[in-house]
Length: 275
Image (cartoon, rainbow, N blue to C red; front, side):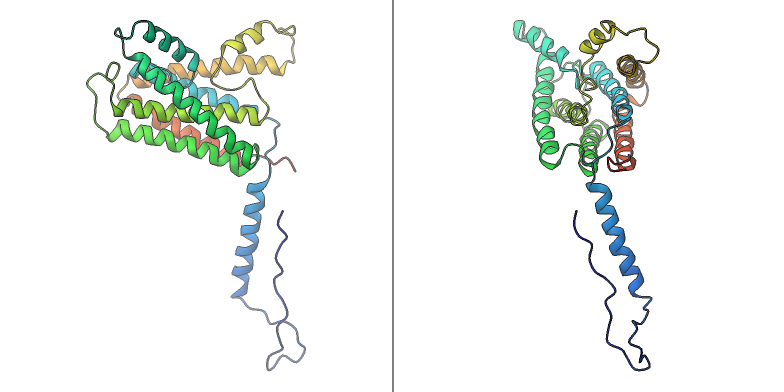
């Protein structure tokens, strides 16, 4: 933590001020306030966030995953978050490459997800995984990538058949969304909620129903395992309905970007580990 600067040094006594006491200056007060304000802002952003109850924020990310994946499947026929399905689609495409172009989109999504994991993980690791500004910056970047994809769908060229067409205005949005989706998983690792990646459900189902205390009254882990797929299912239903409505997939992306902004605000307001 940087040491605070010294302010308000005594000046030489001026005429009419024989005591040598410092003269008050209204002009200096705003400068002092700004200096202390900047110092307080820096201190707030440089602390680590408190891990307690942070799983609530991670669980909310399942809604975003459901929105994005259901809209992507409805529009392009490939996942942008859950890469298990994309791996199967790639295998089917390699077995019969002339039957469908889906495997190319799935491959684009998978490669982008892997590259995003490489960069997001190193960003968190280099600057401290749970530092407030790191979490805020991570989700701001995720939001910006979704906004870029939404802008392409909103104002870019329209495809006659987005499910079969392979063009830049199809592949680029898929790549952008897949690249950012791994950021949520990396955050779950940083906060040591390893199960709440928001991109995997199979292991959650297994852990849920193999839990020895499945029917216990007080079981936080069980509650998380129930909440995660339930929230993703809710997001998937909403994403599918909205994608087929007048707002379309572009509208779903704008909504997802807005939800990412709420996550950024949550991390900004979250209690610090020092409190």
